[in-house]
Image (cartoon, rainbow, N blue to C red; front, side, top):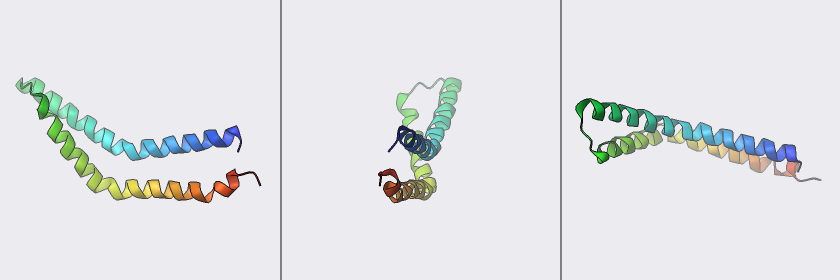
Amino acid sequence: MTQDTVVSLVVSMMSVTVKVAAPMLIAGLVVGLVISVFQAVTQIQEQTLSFIPKVVALIAIVAIAGPWMLDTLVTWTQQLWAAIPNYVGS
């Protein structure tokens, strides 16, 4: 296994990680921003106000995009396992 192969695997892994995590991170960011603007406008400074909507949004994202996320991870893992003989010098 060469250094280029290792770097390629790490880049592929990071790409899949970002692709799978992006929907949840974006949903948390958008909900947090909306709640922050709401708190600034209404001058309600309750710390727990932003927690519950973020949790609900993340649960909704996992329910909606969960099958796609799981399929992406399973596909990448299957490709990685299938390529092991190519990585081992024979």
